[in-house]
Length: 521
Image (cartoon, rainbow, N blue to C red; front, side):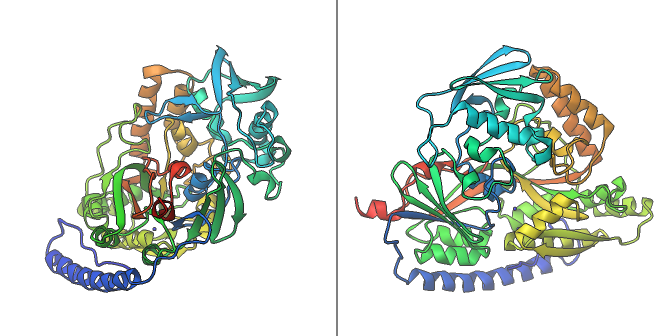
């Protein structure tokens, strides 16, 4: 979650037209060169594998498929294909049965019953209550320091009461609890030790089985028909597209610059499909830092960013300016007024803070799209008197720095946020890493009180508390909201059955057919 094009924000005064003209000239030359490369790639013979396989290109590596630890978006999306879940969430963010049905015995007790037929693990054994208990207890164990612990809310204990029955006991009432039971289930023989080594803790009972996992390639096998599914890590977007056109990849999703998508949309034999997305892109601050810990500095940064220009010129309009972590249309999302683009106000705020042209370090990944965004933000902030040094690191190092708090500024995206208490996981002072995702060390008693109160109630009162928490967070500004980016996939003409989800999940791969399957009809 991120080359370059000269960028000038709309609304700039003298020189803006000239800068945009130069930018257009650079884009025209770049697109011309790109078109030539794509034409040459298209001249090659399409490459089909000897055995049935669907190949998808990824911009980022898959770092950890262990469902007890969670992690980056690429890992989470692939992991969903490997493991069964007790409960899932539907398109309206409401819980629905997956591998189990549930009933509420009283305010503190829930009983889950595994549905028939129960899924089977890779060794043929059935998923049983002991597997569920071992997986959830591993996350509850303080010694494991799982970052997913906070997502289980007030869950206190888990016990198997009968074959296929599991009781969950809470420390306090929690109206959202069924929707928390989305953890991928491991076999008990693997779940008990977080230090278990592969392939044990990658043995799931989902629609796919893991065959190989390396730094640049993940190979799965679809259980229903033995189709191979291969994820290839190709950080450079142009190289990913060239591989698709040469038949070395079949499917790409997101992380492609607008000029590539426009060029691909004009090519025969290539599908380009867009849909609204819920991934929330933001600029994060380290509040423990003496400079970015000053609210006036954070406000100056927010007023120095022209989000509409970024969406228009950098993303070709394929995004919607964001206000909150909760996605558009969520029942608990607050309507928030954006920070107005006002470089003059940004300068006044810096003067009030006693800072003259402060220097900030902004960390991002080596993904070219993210570097382009960082460069555009660097230019906008410079116009308001804020000097920014952009540091790009390979994904593992970058994400490790973010989790460890080694940053002043960084940009990332939250994907798949559905439950409103994700706000607690991200912004509560008790959710510092590794037990939570409050990476900027944000501590606000008013926000804590609102999130604590929301956890003790339900219905519209709960939704109202979450909305007020979002308003207070927005005023305290640990994040500058940027946008919700559209999802897009690019596929070769023979790919059938793939569908985009708002959260960007790859679930539709369970039913997707590779190009050669159509050719043999």
